[in-house]
Structure formats: structure tokens, C-alpha cells
Image (tube, rainbow, N blue to C red; front, side):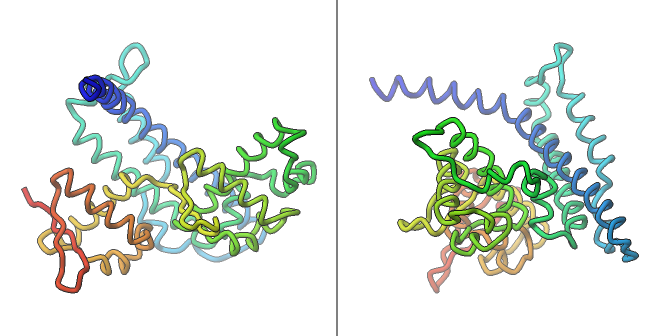
Length: 299
């Protein structure tokens, strides 16, 4: 009886997730696009300040202009939006495959253009662009850890703000695992009065928000999920379809792909293979040396 009661709840949860998916993905891409625009503006200002005469790297022409990306996003959103101003889930369900493909393509275009824009901008400069208060004198108090017992409200607010900074730091630096001892020496975290304690508190906040997890009991290694395994699975699948749809994909090929997912922890790659296999998009093949590969299912 217990199990029978659980099933309807799981079904309701699954339906809710399906309904929220298009809104969540569109919102996520719009945020990424907004960041990209800000970053481009910041780089332009930086070039003016330094009077640099260097040309923009050729790779910047590979991505679509941010205005065209935004226009395509608007087109998808207009198609999905009902007269009531809400997402039309019926329209989404009927055209889910095509919409998902378009969203994935737009995400890749944003990544390409961001890669071109950030080529000569450091991780700290990108963080500073998002959080200008990091270098404002009036916010110097943010580098001191508030007293949890006497200033609980300030402590919670401090954790919230710094957890965003640490999350974006990992994302911009394309780091899946943060080694806190090394991170302590990186700006802006090197400015903390008590670097070790402050970073542990911030990292713990990410863990509590399920955006990260500790990989060691000593709390020195932190796995940060700045992109979900679902999204990584989609990217690896699309990449594998492009380079070798007929041959099994080996882990070392993922490592040598020079993509954002090339440095994913081995455990995560195994999880992704299992996810794709469960979705019947291919199968895991065990090799003689104990390693595994993934063979895409061709329809």
C-alpha cells in the first residue's frame, strides 16, 4: 500500500517537471545571454581604456551575434507563449523534439561567442564584471565573516552572496572540482581575513543548495555543478553523434576533445553513460582492460 501511494506522487512530480522544463531552459539561456552582453560591453570598455589595437581573434566570428541569438530565443518564446502570457505546454509537447534541438543549438552558440569574448579576459575580470562590489571600498566589510551567533541575518546574507560568486568563479574558470587550499590564493577569495574559514562556509552553502558536494571528508575538494549532468549528457551525445556516430566513444576521446566537458570527473562520465543508456540512446561497452566506452544507438 505504501508503494502504491508513492506512485501518484511521483507521477505528479514528473508532470510538474515536464511543464516547468521549457520555462526553466528559456530563462537559463536568457540569463546566459545577458551575461554575455555584459561581458562584451566590459571587454569593449577595457580595450578603450588600454587603447589596445589588437584585432578580435578570428574565432569570434564562429558564434552568431548575440542579437541574432536573442531574436531566435524570442521566436521560440513567442511560439510557446499563449494569449494569457504563459507557456503553452500543449504547443511545447507537440513540438518538443524540434524545440529541444533549437535550444541546444542556441546554448552552443552562446558558449562559442562567450569563448571568443572571454579569450583575453581573466576569470577574476569576468567575476568582477558580474559583481562590481568586489572592489568597491564601501563593501570591504564583505571580506570579513559575520558572527553567526550575534549577526545571523548578516551571516545568511553574506553566505548567499558569496556562494553566487564561488559558483560563477568555477563556471567561468571551467573548473568542475575546486581545491579550496588553492582557491584561497585566488582573487577575490585571497582578500578574506580568514580565508580557510570563509571559503568553507561559502562552499557549505553551495552544498546546502545542492549546487555542489564534498569529495573529501577533510572538506578540501568540492565538486561544483555549474551545469547539470543532464545538460552534460546532451552535449556529449551531440558531440559523439558529430564525430563518430558509428564507433564507440572512449573516455580518453572525451578527455582530448578540448570541450568544457573534457575535464569532467571520471565518475560523472560513467553516470552520463548510464543516463544515456537508460534513455535507450545507446549502450555501455566494457573493454578488455576494464575501461568502458559508449556506443550510440543509430535509428
